[in-house]
Image (cartoon, rainbow, N blue to C red; front, side):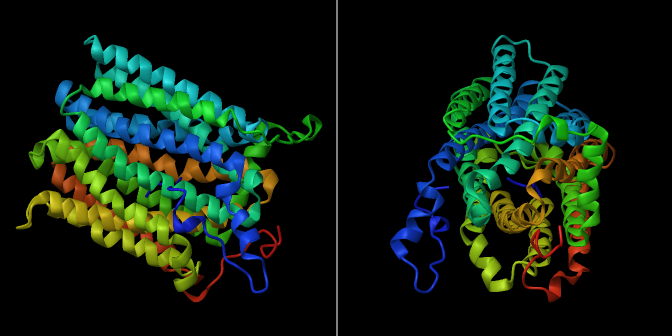
Length: 441
Protein backbone atom coordinates (compact mmCIF):
# COMPACT_ATOMS: atom_id res chain seq x y z
CA UNK A 1 0.00 0.00 0.00
CA UNK A 2 2.60 2.46 -1.07
CA UNK A 3 1.81 6.10 -0.52
CA UNK A 4 2.54 7.80 -3.63
CA UNK A 5 3.48 8.99 -5.09
CA UNK A 6 0.82 10.22 -17.20
CA UNK A 7 0.18 10.80 -20.74
CA UNK A 8 -0.40 14.48 -21.43
CA UNK A 9 -3.52 13.32 -23.31
CA UNK A 10 -4.96 11.75 -20.17
CA UNK A 11 -8.53 12.80 -19.21
CA UNK A 12 -6.99 13.82 -15.89
CA UNK A 13 -5.63 16.88 -17.62
CA UNK A 14 -9.17 18.21 -18.01
CA UNK A 15 -10.56 20.67 -15.48
CA UNK A 16 -14.13 21.19 -14.33
CA UNK A 17 -15.78 24.02 -16.26
CA UNK A 18 -17.88 26.23 -14.02
CA UNK A 19 -21.16 27.63 -15.44
CA UNK A 20 -20.59 30.87 -17.25
CA UNK A 21 -16.81 30.45 -17.44
CA UNK A 22 -14.64 30.55 -20.55
CA UNK A 23 -13.82 26.93 -21.53
CA UNK A 24 -10.72 27.92 -23.48
CA UNK A 25 -9.35 29.86 -20.53
CA UNK A 26 -10.07 26.94 -18.17
CA UNK A 27 -8.33 24.48 -20.49
CA UNK A 28 -5.27 26.73 -20.55
CA UNK A 29 -5.24 26.63 -16.75
CA UNK A 30 -4.65 22.87 -16.85
CA UNK A 31 -1.27 21.79 -15.54
CA UNK A 32 -0.39 20.59 -19.02
CA UNK A 33 0.28 24.26 -19.74
CA UNK A 34 2.22 24.89 -16.52
CA UNK A 35 5.87 24.96 -17.62
CA UNK A 36 7.48 24.31 -14.24
CA UNK A 37 5.09 21.48 -13.44
CA UNK A 38 5.94 19.90 -16.82
CA UNK A 39 9.61 19.86 -15.85
CA UNK A 40 8.79 18.19 -12.54
CA UNK A 41 6.37 15.83 -14.27
CA UNK A 42 8.91 14.77 -16.90
CA UNK A 43 11.69 14.29 -14.38
CA UNK A 44 9.38 12.24 -12.19
CA UNK A 45 8.32 10.10 -15.16
CA UNK A 46 11.93 9.26 -16.04
CA UNK A 47 12.77 8.40 -12.46
CA UNK A 48 9.66 6.24 -12.16
CA UNK A 49 10.50 4.19 -15.26
CA UNK A 50 14.06 3.65 -14.08
CA UNK A 51 12.85 2.71 -10.62
CA UNK A 52 10.65 0.01 -12.12
CA UNK A 53 13.59 -1.43 -14.05
CA UNK A 54 15.72 -1.69 -10.93
CA UNK A 55 12.75 -2.91 -8.89
CA UNK A 56 12.77 -6.06 -11.01
CA UNK A 57 16.47 -6.29 -11.86
CA UNK A 58 17.71 -6.10 -8.25
CA UNK A 59 15.73 -9.10 -6.91
CA UNK A 60 16.51 -11.08 -10.07
CA UNK A 61 20.19 -10.34 -9.51
CA UNK A 62 19.86 -11.48 -5.89
CA UNK A 63 17.88 -14.67 -6.61
CA UNK A 64 19.30 -15.90 -9.91
CA UNK A 65 22.92 -14.70 -9.67
CA UNK A 66 23.69 -14.49 -5.94
CA UNK A 67 21.30 -17.35 -4.99
CA UNK A 68 19.76 -15.41 -2.10
CA UNK A 69 17.85 -17.22 0.65
CA UNK A 70 14.44 -16.25 2.05
CA UNK A 71 16.10 -14.42 4.93
CA UNK A 72 18.52 -12.57 2.64
CA UNK A 73 15.62 -11.40 0.45
CA UNK A 74 13.87 -10.17 3.57
CA UNK A 75 16.94 -8.18 4.62
CA UNK A 76 17.28 -6.74 1.10
CA UNK A 77 13.64 -5.68 1.11
CA UNK A 78 14.05 -4.12 4.57
CA UNK A 79 17.23 -2.28 3.52
CA UNK A 80 15.34 -0.45 0.77
CA UNK A 81 12.94 1.10 3.31
CA UNK A 82 15.06 1.29 6.47
CA UNK A 83 15.99 4.93 5.88
CA UNK A 84 12.40 5.97 6.56
CA UNK A 85 12.90 4.74 10.13
CA UNK A 86 16.42 6.12 10.54
CA UNK A 87 16.09 9.62 9.09
CA UNK A 88 12.42 9.95 8.19
CA UNK A 89 11.49 12.42 10.92
CA UNK A 90 14.41 14.88 10.81
CA UNK A 91 14.29 14.82 7.00
CA UNK A 92 10.99 16.72 7.09
CA UNK A 93 12.36 19.50 9.30
CA UNK A 94 15.51 19.71 7.14
CA UNK A 95 13.47 19.88 3.92
CA UNK A 96 11.34 22.71 5.35
CA UNK A 97 14.60 24.67 5.79
CA UNK A 98 15.93 23.99 2.27
CA UNK A 99 14.97 24.79 -1.29
CA UNK A 100 13.05 21.73 -2.43
CA UNK A 101 14.22 21.93 -6.03
CA UNK A 102 17.83 21.53 -4.88
CA UNK A 103 16.89 18.62 -2.64
CA UNK A 104 15.26 16.82 -5.59
CA UNK A 105 18.33 17.31 -7.80
CA UNK A 106 20.76 16.16 -5.12
CA UNK A 107 18.68 13.05 -4.38
CA UNK A 108 18.60 12.10 -8.06
CA UNK A 109 22.38 12.49 -8.37
CA UNK A 110 23.08 10.40 -5.26
CA UNK A 111 20.83 7.60 -6.51
CA UNK A 112 22.50 7.66 -9.93
CA UNK A 113 25.96 7.40 -8.35
CA UNK A 114 25.01 4.48 -6.08
CA UNK A 115 23.39 2.58 -8.93
CA UNK A 116 26.47 3.12 -11.08
CA UNK A 117 28.51 1.43 -8.33
CA UNK A 118 26.08 -1.52 -8.33
CA UNK A 119 26.47 -1.86 -12.10
CA UNK A 120 30.27 -1.93 -11.87
CA UNK A 121 30.15 -4.52 -9.09
CA UNK A 122 27.69 -6.73 -10.98
CA UNK A 123 29.51 -6.58 -14.30
CA UNK A 124 32.90 -7.36 -12.71
CA UNK A 125 31.55 -10.25 -10.62
CA UNK A 126 32.14 -8.45 -7.30
CA UNK A 127 28.51 -8.05 -6.24
CA UNK A 128 27.57 -9.62 -2.90
CA UNK A 129 24.41 -9.54 -0.80
CA UNK A 130 25.99 -7.25 1.86
CA UNK A 131 26.98 -4.87 -0.94
CA UNK A 132 23.38 -4.83 -2.18
CA UNK A 133 22.15 -4.15 1.36
CA UNK A 134 24.37 -1.06 1.64
CA UNK A 135 23.41 0.16 -1.82
CA UNK A 136 19.71 -0.31 -1.09
CA UNK A 137 20.08 1.61 2.18
CA UNK A 138 21.86 4.51 0.47
CA UNK A 139 19.27 4.68 -2.30
CA UNK A 140 16.55 4.59 0.34
CA UNK A 141 18.12 7.52 2.18
CA UNK A 142 18.14 9.65 -0.96
CA UNK A 143 14.58 8.56 -1.70
CA UNK A 144 13.42 9.77 1.72
CA UNK A 145 14.60 13.30 0.92
CA UNK A 146 13.27 13.15 -2.63
CA UNK A 147 9.81 11.97 -1.60
CA UNK A 148 9.38 14.46 1.25
CA UNK A 149 10.55 17.36 -0.94
CA UNK A 150 8.49 16.11 -3.88
CA UNK A 151 5.17 15.98 -2.04
CA UNK A 152 5.85 19.25 -0.24
CA UNK A 153 6.85 20.98 -3.50
CA UNK A 154 3.66 20.30 -5.50
CA UNK A 155 1.28 22.62 -3.57
CA UNK A 156 3.63 25.63 -3.73
CA UNK A 157 4.51 24.94 -7.37
CA UNK A 158 0.96 24.60 -8.75
CA UNK A 159 -1.25 26.19 -6.07
CA UNK A 160 -3.88 24.57 -3.87
CA UNK A 161 -6.55 24.71 -6.61
CA UNK A 162 -4.52 22.27 -8.71
CA UNK A 163 -3.22 19.95 -5.98
CA UNK A 164 -5.60 17.09 -6.83
CA UNK A 165 -4.91 17.46 -10.55
CA UNK A 166 -1.15 17.50 -9.92
CA UNK A 167 -1.28 14.45 -7.67
CA UNK A 168 -3.47 12.62 -10.19
CA UNK A 169 -1.03 13.30 -12.98
CA UNK A 170 1.97 12.21 -10.91
CA UNK A 171 0.09 9.09 -9.78
CA UNK A 172 -0.77 8.36 -13.41
CA UNK A 173 2.92 8.73 -14.25
CA UNK A 174 3.78 6.07 -11.70
CA UNK A 175 1.06 3.82 -13.08
CA UNK A 176 2.24 4.18 -16.69
CA UNK A 177 5.79 3.43 -15.53
CA UNK A 178 4.52 0.38 -13.66
CA UNK A 179 2.98 -0.87 -16.91
CA UNK A 180 5.88 -0.09 -19.24
CA UNK A 181 8.81 -0.65 -16.86
CA UNK A 182 8.28 -4.32 -15.94
CA UNK A 183 7.46 -5.26 -19.54
CA UNK A 184 10.64 -3.59 -20.80
CA UNK A 185 12.66 -5.12 -17.97
CA UNK A 186 11.27 -8.59 -18.62
CA UNK A 187 12.21 -8.47 -22.27
CA UNK A 188 15.63 -6.89 -21.69
CA UNK A 189 16.47 -9.52 -19.10
CA UNK A 190 16.31 -12.06 -21.92
CA UNK A 191 19.34 -10.48 -23.59
CA UNK A 192 21.21 -8.43 -20.96
CA UNK A 193 22.29 -9.05 -17.38
CA UNK A 194 20.41 -7.66 -14.38
CA UNK A 195 23.43 -5.49 -13.60
CA UNK A 196 23.37 -3.87 -17.04
CA UNK A 197 19.66 -3.18 -16.69
CA UNK A 198 20.27 -1.36 -13.40
CA UNK A 199 22.59 0.93 -15.36
CA UNK A 200 19.59 2.21 -17.30
CA UNK A 201 18.09 3.40 -14.03
CA UNK A 202 21.26 5.37 -13.24
CA UNK A 203 20.87 7.22 -16.53
CA UNK A 204 17.19 8.00 -15.93
CA UNK A 205 18.03 9.58 -12.57
CA UNK A 206 20.64 11.79 -14.24
CA UNK A 207 18.16 12.96 -16.88
CA UNK A 208 15.52 13.47 -14.18
CA UNK A 209 17.92 15.79 -12.33
CA UNK A 210 18.43 17.73 -15.56
CA UNK A 211 14.70 18.37 -16.02
CA UNK A 212 14.13 19.37 -12.40
CA UNK A 213 17.04 21.80 -12.67
CA UNK A 214 15.10 23.63 -15.41
CA UNK A 215 12.30 24.67 -13.05
CA UNK A 216 12.31 28.48 -12.89
CA UNK A 217 10.04 29.11 -9.90
CA UNK A 218 11.79 30.55 -6.88
CA UNK A 219 11.02 29.43 -3.36
CA UNK A 220 10.63 31.67 -0.36
CA UNK A 221 12.31 30.10 2.65
CA UNK A 222 11.20 30.90 6.20
CA UNK A 223 13.47 33.48 7.85
CA UNK A 224 16.43 31.93 9.65
CA UNK A 225 15.56 33.78 12.85
CA UNK A 226 12.14 32.02 12.89
CA UNK A 227 13.70 28.57 13.07
CA UNK A 228 13.37 26.66 16.30
CA UNK A 229 15.34 23.68 17.63
CA UNK A 230 15.07 20.64 15.36
CA UNK A 231 13.40 18.51 18.04
CA UNK A 232 10.63 21.08 18.50
CA UNK A 233 9.96 21.25 14.77
CA UNK A 234 9.85 17.45 14.50
CA UNK A 235 7.47 17.30 17.46
CA UNK A 236 5.20 19.87 15.82
CA UNK A 237 4.94 17.78 12.64
CA UNK A 238 4.14 14.63 14.58
CA UNK A 239 1.65 16.47 16.78
CA UNK A 240 -0.24 17.69 13.72
CA UNK A 241 -0.55 14.16 12.30
CA UNK A 242 -1.57 12.59 15.62
CA UNK A 243 -3.94 15.45 16.44
CA UNK A 244 -6.07 15.06 13.31
CA UNK A 245 -8.54 12.17 13.91
CA UNK A 246 -9.26 11.32 10.27
CA UNK A 247 -5.64 11.68 9.20
CA UNK A 248 -4.61 9.48 12.13
CA UNK A 249 -6.95 6.71 10.93
CA UNK A 250 -5.68 6.93 7.35
CA UNK A 251 -2.07 6.76 8.53
CA UNK A 252 -2.88 3.68 10.65
CA UNK A 253 -4.52 2.00 7.65
CA UNK A 254 -1.59 2.70 5.36
CA UNK A 255 1.08 1.71 7.89
CA UNK A 256 -0.51 -1.68 8.60
CA UNK A 257 -0.99 -2.17 4.86
CA UNK A 258 2.68 -1.44 4.22
CA UNK A 259 3.64 -3.96 6.91
CA UNK A 260 1.71 -6.55 4.90
CA UNK A 261 3.17 -5.43 1.59
CA UNK A 262 6.66 -5.52 3.13
CA UNK A 263 6.16 -9.23 3.80
CA UNK A 264 4.82 -9.78 0.30
CA UNK A 265 7.57 -7.75 -1.37
CA UNK A 266 10.26 -9.82 0.35
CA UNK A 267 8.73 -13.06 -0.96
CA UNK A 268 7.56 -12.03 -4.46
CA UNK A 269 10.70 -12.89 -6.41
CA UNK A 270 11.20 -16.20 -4.59
CA UNK A 271 7.52 -17.08 -5.04
CA UNK A 272 7.39 -16.35 -8.77
CA UNK A 273 10.85 -17.57 -9.78
CA UNK A 274 11.16 -20.62 -7.51
CA UNK A 275 7.73 -21.67 -6.24
CA UNK A 276 5.80 -21.04 -9.47
CA UNK A 277 8.86 -21.87 -11.64
CA UNK A 278 8.34 -18.89 -13.95
CA UNK A 279 11.06 -17.05 -15.87
CA UNK A 280 12.48 -13.57 -15.30
CA UNK A 281 10.58 -12.42 -18.41
CA UNK A 282 7.32 -13.77 -16.94
CA UNK A 283 8.19 -12.02 -13.67
CA UNK A 284 8.24 -8.72 -15.54
CA UNK A 285 5.12 -9.52 -17.54
CA UNK A 286 3.06 -10.21 -14.41
CA UNK A 287 3.79 -6.81 -12.88
CA UNK A 288 3.46 -5.02 -16.19
CA UNK A 289 0.02 -6.46 -16.92
CA UNK A 290 -1.16 -6.02 -13.31
CA UNK A 291 -0.09 -2.39 -13.33
CA UNK A 292 -2.74 -1.63 -15.94
CA UNK A 293 -5.04 -1.68 -12.92
CA UNK A 294 -2.99 1.11 -11.36
CA UNK A 295 -3.23 3.15 -14.55
CA UNK A 296 -7.00 2.69 -14.58
CA UNK A 297 -7.11 3.85 -10.96
CA UNK A 298 -5.20 7.01 -11.84
CA UNK A 299 -7.59 7.72 -14.72
CA UNK A 300 -10.76 7.42 -12.64
CA UNK A 301 -9.43 8.68 -9.29
CA UNK A 302 -10.99 12.13 -9.49
CA UNK A 303 -14.27 10.86 -10.91
CA UNK A 304 -14.46 8.13 -8.28
CA UNK A 305 -14.30 10.83 -5.59
CA UNK A 306 -17.26 12.55 -7.24
CA UNK A 307 -19.30 9.34 -7.59
CA UNK A 308 -18.67 7.83 -4.17
CA UNK A 309 -17.73 10.92 -2.17
CA UNK A 310 -14.09 11.67 -1.39
CA UNK A 311 -14.48 10.71 2.29
CA UNK A 312 -16.42 7.48 1.70
CA UNK A 313 -13.96 6.53 -1.03
CA UNK A 314 -11.22 5.92 1.56
CA UNK A 315 -12.84 2.95 3.39
CA UNK A 316 -14.24 1.59 0.11
CA UNK A 317 -10.78 1.40 -1.46
CA UNK A 318 -9.22 0.06 1.75
CA UNK A 319 -11.53 -2.95 1.52
CA UNK A 320 -10.93 -3.14 -2.21
CA UNK A 321 -7.18 -3.57 -1.64
CA UNK A 322 -7.61 -6.51 0.70
CA UNK A 323 -9.97 -8.86 -1.13
CA UNK A 324 -8.12 -9.45 -4.43
CA UNK A 325 -4.66 -9.75 -2.86
CA UNK A 326 -5.69 -13.22 -1.62
CA UNK A 327 -5.37 -14.40 -5.22
CA UNK A 328 -1.57 -14.09 -4.96
CA UNK A 329 -0.98 -17.10 -2.66
CA UNK A 330 -3.89 -18.91 -4.35
CA UNK A 331 -2.00 -18.80 -7.66
CA UNK A 332 -0.02 -21.85 -6.52
CA UNK A 333 -3.16 -24.02 -6.10
CA UNK A 334 -6.02 -22.77 -8.30
CA UNK A 335 -6.72 -24.68 -11.57
CA UNK A 336 -5.88 -21.54 -13.53
CA UNK A 337 -2.52 -20.56 -15.04
CA UNK A 338 -0.62 -18.87 -12.17
CA UNK A 339 0.29 -15.89 -14.32
CA UNK A 340 -3.40 -15.14 -14.93
CA UNK A 341 -4.29 -15.42 -11.23
CA UNK A 342 -1.38 -13.20 -10.21
CA UNK A 343 -2.22 -10.56 -12.81
CA UNK A 344 -5.90 -10.39 -11.79
CA UNK A 345 -5.16 -10.28 -8.06
CA UNK A 346 -2.41 -7.69 -8.27
CA UNK A 347 -4.20 -5.66 -10.94
CA UNK A 348 -7.36 -5.20 -8.87
CA UNK A 349 -5.28 -4.34 -5.81
CA UNK A 350 -3.21 -1.78 -7.72
CA UNK A 351 -6.40 -0.14 -8.99
CA UNK A 352 -7.73 0.49 -5.49
CA UNK A 353 -4.31 1.41 -4.07
CA UNK A 354 -3.91 4.21 -6.61
CA UNK A 355 -7.40 5.60 -6.00
CA UNK A 356 -6.78 5.43 -2.24
CA UNK A 357 -3.44 7.22 -2.60
CA UNK A 358 -4.89 10.05 -4.70
CA UNK A 359 -7.63 10.64 -2.13
CA UNK A 360 -5.47 10.49 1.00
CA UNK A 361 -2.41 12.40 -0.29
CA UNK A 362 -4.60 15.22 -1.63
CA UNK A 363 -6.49 15.31 1.68
CA UNK A 364 -3.43 15.80 3.84
CA UNK A 365 -1.97 18.43 1.49
CA UNK A 366 -5.18 20.46 1.73
CA UNK A 367 -5.48 19.92 5.48
CA UNK A 368 -1.96 20.97 6.44
CA UNK A 369 -0.78 24.60 6.78
CA UNK A 370 1.94 25.30 4.16
CA UNK A 371 4.65 25.97 6.75
CA UNK A 372 4.20 22.42 8.12
CA UNK A 373 4.03 20.52 4.83
CA UNK A 374 7.57 19.13 4.92
CA UNK A 375 7.35 18.03 8.54
CA UNK A 376 3.83 16.66 8.10
CA UNK A 377 4.81 14.61 5.03
CA UNK A 378 7.96 13.36 6.77
CA UNK A 379 6.00 12.37 9.88
CA UNK A 380 3.40 10.54 7.82
CA UNK A 381 6.00 8.74 5.72
CA UNK A 382 8.02 7.85 8.82
CA UNK A 383 4.97 6.09 10.22
CA UNK A 384 3.61 4.48 7.05
CA UNK A 385 6.93 3.43 5.53
CA UNK A 386 8.59 2.67 8.84
CA UNK A 387 6.55 -0.54 8.95
CA UNK A 388 7.81 -1.72 5.54
CA UNK A 389 11.34 -2.75 6.65
CA UNK A 390 9.80 -4.50 9.63
CA UNK A 391 7.56 -6.31 7.16
CA UNK A 392 10.56 -7.24 5.05
CA UNK A 393 12.39 -8.78 8.00
CA UNK A 394 9.20 -10.47 9.16
CA UNK A 395 8.70 -11.83 5.66
CA UNK A 396 12.23 -13.24 5.61
CA UNK A 397 11.69 -14.90 9.00
CA UNK A 398 8.27 -16.29 8.06
CA UNK A 399 9.58 -17.55 4.74
CA UNK A 400 12.45 -19.34 6.48
CA UNK A 401 10.31 -20.74 9.32
CA UNK A 402 7.01 -21.54 7.59
CA UNK A 403 7.68 -21.33 3.88
CA UNK A 404 7.04 -18.75 1.17
CA UNK A 405 3.32 -19.43 0.63
CA UNK A 406 2.36 -19.32 4.36
CA UNK A 407 4.24 -16.02 4.63
CA UNK A 408 2.09 -14.63 1.82
CA UNK A 409 -1.08 -15.70 3.65
CA UNK A 410 0.06 -13.79 6.74
CA UNK A 411 0.37 -10.72 4.50
CA UNK A 412 -3.18 -11.24 3.23
CA UNK A 413 -4.59 -11.35 6.78
CA UNK A 414 -2.72 -8.16 7.71
CA UNK A 415 -4.12 -6.42 4.62
CA UNK A 416 -7.65 -7.07 5.85
CA UNK A 417 -6.65 -5.80 9.30
CA UNK A 418 -5.29 -2.62 7.71
CA UNK A 419 -8.76 -1.63 6.48
CA UNK A 420 -10.29 -1.61 9.96
CA UNK A 421 -9.16 1.89 11.12
CA UNK A 422 -10.95 3.59 8.20
CA UNK A 423 -13.84 1.13 7.89
CA UNK A 424 -14.72 1.65 11.57
CA UNK A 425 -14.73 5.45 11.27
CA UNK A 426 -17.03 8.41 10.51
CA UNK A 427 -15.79 8.40 6.90
CA UNK A 428 -18.74 6.21 5.86
CA UNK A 429 -21.22 8.98 6.71
CA UNK A 430 -19.19 11.85 5.19
CA UNK A 431 -18.93 13.03 1.60
CA UNK A 432 -16.28 15.76 1.69
CA UNK A 433 -13.02 15.71 3.63
CA UNK A 434 -12.06 18.76 5.76
CA UNK A 435 -9.52 21.35 4.60
CA UNK A 436 -7.08 23.55 6.51
CA UNK A 437 -9.82 26.18 6.90
CA UNK A 438 -12.61 23.85 8.00
CA UNK A 439 -10.21 22.11 10.42
CA UNK A 440 -9.54 25.43 12.09
CA UNK A 441 -5.79 25.33 11.45
